[in-house]
Amino acid sequence: MPGNNNAERTYIMIKPDGVQRGLVGDIISRFEKRGYKLIALKMRSADEELLRRHYCDLTEKKFFPSLLAFMTSGPVCSMVWEGLDAVKQGRQMLGETNPLNSKPGSIRGDYCIDMGKNICHGSDSVENAEKEIAMWFGEGEVQSYVQSNSVHIYE
Ligand code: IDP
Ligand code: MG
Image 1 (spheres, rainbow, N blue to C red):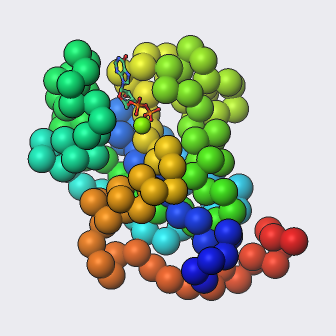
Image 2 (cartoon, protein in one colour):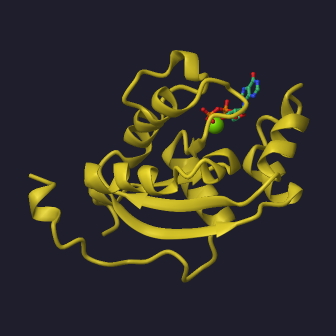
């Protein structure tokens, strides 16, 4: 429903370390249990061209080559979650970029210790979320459906 706050969308990605460590199910489960609606999901191996677009604000950083090597080291799991404040809540659920600053209870705060292997990505603004969704998913890959339990999730 356009114009409806409950329809905010965010792009969440489980990075190659999270896939290898078997955390896909747990991460999906956290978003499901929170009440968010899963509207797209797939695995893929990202190439350099896509990652340069995805991380366009970071390409000049010293750590970018190692980020690129890490992100192309194996498949990622891409998701779109929809719901109230999905972008900000998604970031809260992920934790801080540096796991040292991530509170226990967050994904990074529970599962990782190194900034270069921090398990997951979440969009940092509604605008970037829409860009990232369009980058990682094609038309028709994002579903539109009524979440039947929404009356128990929203006032
Ligand atoms: P975010 O993932 O929390 O949004 P960004 O600043 O957008 O953080 O950085 C993207 C990713 O680049 C981080 O999640 C992390 O994997 C990596 N990264 C960011 N800063 C550093 C750093 O200083 N050293 C190593 N890797 C970094
Ligand atoms: Mg970021």
